[in-house]
Image (cartoon, rainbow, N blue to C red):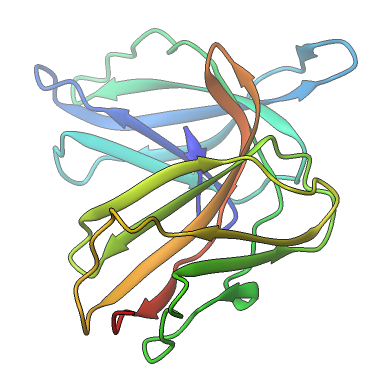
Length: 204
């Protein structure tokens, strides 16, 4: 379970290799913060299996910000046998950091000599941490780091790419800033994922 760059909540699960699954039914229940309980689960999607991949996923876009939901699913095989419910998992969505407020951003936007990345979040996000990720154009991870916000009510934030992280001259890199909050057993239950911004590295 994670935030999705489209603004929805991503559900992903491993497909049993010993069974031929025909479909999944996905159920959702809204979490009530006051009572710390949830209302009745309702079916939100029946997902037909078109190929026997090792993982399957669904993105729920019919959600409200700052609201947490429980999700669970059942699988149905080709003989119409129905599994037990999966264990419910809790997650909610925070507002995204927009790529238009991330600098540098653009295939010709050069990373400055100070190797500083900047972003702006202009409303109270209720986040506990930022998670900044840099990858190359081949999807190889360069760095993923947790950053504590300087200001929780909205401001320009920044992070300087350390010198020990090697970047190749003339290459374009992608970066994004996620948010995370309300950890439960070391796992975030609220978060968001920005779209990817880019920068061109021409050395110092």
